[in-house]
Length: 289
Image (cartoon, rainbow, N blue to C red; front, side, top):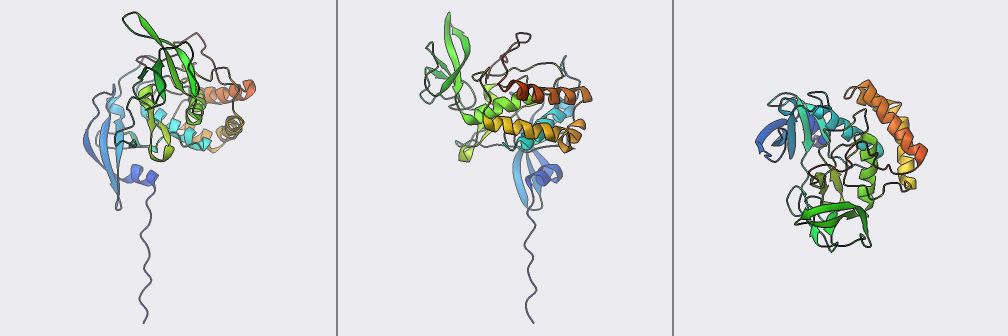
């Protein structure tokens, strides 16, 4: 008699792991303004570190409805996935030890941290916190080859320096995503380089406002033509927002916010250019890191 055929164990997807796994809290990330808990999540033999942000730990904001930041984080992930760029770590909405909240895969940087180190990689005088090698302050009037100027920044003792970011295709894609989701808080510490050359953006709780709230350190392409890839991606996104993606986002943000998201995509396609600061709202988040 032949031996019974062995069925290999089922591979657990990251989405299943985050949504169905058991959360074990390891500690709290103290630097965050809202409750952010570092956890381990395990499910059917697979385990990974993750971040859990319970709705109960969200600080009320004057310009966003209370208790909606977790949903907005998930909505940002859904849009990122629809672009095909994979710029936001896997994110789900689920129940946890402190109630419903956002659960997101933890991203390790190549040096073993969470990707929030400073560095200039030859750009100039000093790096800017977060996004190692992607942001810098330079003592110059022009950004230099391979860099894009954001604006002048005060650095103390009456000195100013030029804030720059890398002329990096990954950042450019992220700038397009931020314009779509109306990100009001793209800081340096929210840029996470990962092994294999990947780049992720995190902390998307203040997004999808129906009013123009775009605040970012990635203004270097402002007014420039969108790349052909970005145009093609926005066209696919426009179609997706009229279908399954629109239905999914309708479960996470308001109808007015969903309509505004569609309008932003349409506006980007109509202009064919990266947006510029409106002047109606501070263009750069504070603090910038």
